[in-house]
Each structure stands twice: as structure tokens, then as C-alpha cells.
Image (cartoon, rainbow, N blue to C red; front, side, top):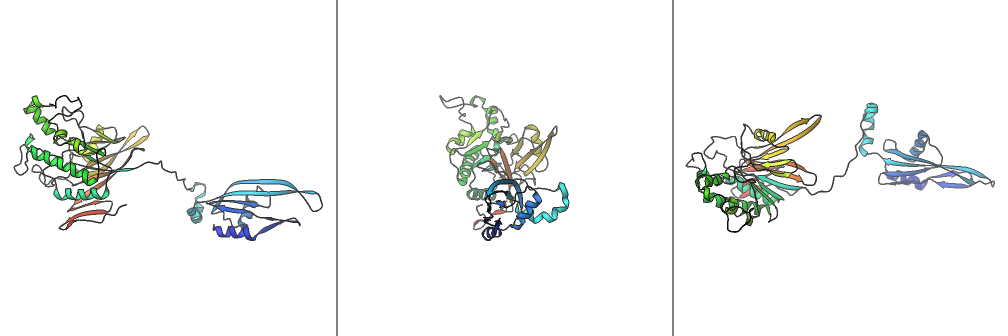
Length: 405
């Protein structure tokens, strides 16, 4: 109902009470609410609406919240007294779309719908995390690696979670090494340090930011080699350090995690323990230790091993899928995520034409409300895509349509 018509009514209309007095009709409208003082005392809703319509109120657009009938005595022209009455109506404007749809839903009867109130969300600060892994150094996919750094520089995440298998360590493997895919331990350590440093710097993160490195099965190859060949040196530490200090030959020391600001997540540390990092309540990150056919199936199988949702690496596959469990009559939805790979997609010498997908994951997390929203960053033909944006490697550099949201 246009405010102008109500405003004009209050300016131009008066109601005569008796022969000696004029009473101005008061109509006030503000912020979707209105009050109207009617010169007749009545609680009959039909009579009230008749008077309200005369004053410009449309019942399809307004609803009556309350009616108050006032009575008082006033002197008349003959020196006596007479009874005066007035009805005060308080109204609220209906949602705009409802008036437009009234005619369409008229046949719904008592089973029709009504608009639901909108509740304000609790104030919190959502964060965006980038979750990636499986570089298998020194056999990383160079194009994808360069694109990932451009991506991090543009979106500026609040934290990084690395899902393990940063270093391949092929000459420490129990499997026979392919001559085309081999490297020394030192090459792996040097490359690992450089990669974690560059990821941190591209993301614009500093010490104290959330940078979690979850140990993978390839990182454990160094530990197992020590236990197998030089058990006397396993766990050896610098002189006079605390029990929580990492051993001298631990990867966290060899790759200078303290200097980089990364946290090496490997508790407990005697054997490959499949460590879990709880990102938000009910979402667990782990590297993983087995592979099922097809993307997403390994993560779904891992759901049986955790009481919550799962995000994992290891499979070199990229997927987000879901699973519903019932506890009695209560339905619970769980999410299963696989984070893809940053490695050469040709198989690293041990898998021919593998079903692997390059890419990684972003997570929008709300720590206060314990919610998360995963999204894929998909690598295909020298391009990564995310939320409709792309980053493509060309001869002149990285081309993108990124625009800060």
C-alpha cells in the first residue's frame, strides 16, 4: 500500500463530531507498521476494515495486529454530557510478495502456506582453508603446482592443510624402483622444504597461522628405513631436550618445520598411525591407507572408521560425496572427500594410465557453529577451475578471470 495515499488522507480528511467540534483522523505509517484512529468505537472486524479501506488500507497488504476501543464523556452544546468513542487499530504490512500471490493461492484454503520468519545468523567469522597433498616430490605436476600458487595468491586463504605424501622417497620403498622415477633422500627433503615454504608464502601466511602437515605413508618410509637398517639411531635427539622434541632425523627437523611455521601432525609416532586432525567438530582429516575403485569410494569406506565426516588424500582422486546414517528415527548426513593429487598424472612409474585427478579442495569453515562447506578445485588441460573462475597456464604466464568476491 503506497504510503503517499495514507499521507494525503491524513492531510486532507477530517471527521465532524457533533455540530461544534471537528476531529482530525490520525493515520501514521512507518517501517511497515501503521496506526489508525477511527472515529467510531467498534470491535466488529468487518466494520473496522470498512473504515480502514476508506483510509487507503488494503487487507491484501495489511493485517490487523490489535484493536483498542476507547470511551469517554465530553460536554455537549446543551451543557450536558455525551459518550464519545474511538477505535485505535494497529496494523502490520504483510510481506510484499504475499499480496501479489493472494489471488493465486485463494483456492488453497486452510492448508495454504505462510511466509516463514527470517532469523539472523549468529555472528561468526567464516574462514577459508585450502586442503591439498600428494605432490610425490620430486615428481610433482609442474603446471598444476604453478597454477596452485597463483590461486593461493589470489584467494588469500586463512590456512593450509597438507594431506601427506609430499615426498615420494622411491629409493626407500619396499617396492622395486622404476629407473625413470627415482630420487635421493636429500632431493626429497630439499624439495619438501621449498614446497612448504612456497605454499606458505603464496598464501600470505605467517607463523601462527593454521598450517597443518598430516603425515602420509611415503613420509613414513624414512622412519621405517631407520628402524630396519639403523634402529640404534631411531628417535635420537639433540642433547638435553624435552620429551616432546622431535628426533634429529625426524622429517619435521630435516625440513625445518619450526622455521617454516608448519605443524607436523603424526601422533603417535612409532609406526604409521593414520593420524587424524579434526578441522572442525565432526570433520576429520587423515591421509588414508587403502584405495577403492572410482573417485569417492575410498573416502566413503573410511567413513566406517570415524564418527563423523572424512577428508583424505592417498588415492590421487578428487571427489565430494555423502552418506546418510540413521540412529533410530534420527537422520545424520556425513561427507566424504578425496583431495586429488598434485603429482604427475602419468602414474609415477608404478601405475599405467591411472584413474587419477589433479586438483585440491577448499573448505569454508565456521569454528563457532562447527560447519564446513567443501568445494573442488579441478585441474584439467593446463587449467584449474573453482566457483566459475579459471586459472590457465599460457606461454606468457597465468591467465585468470579471478575477481575478488
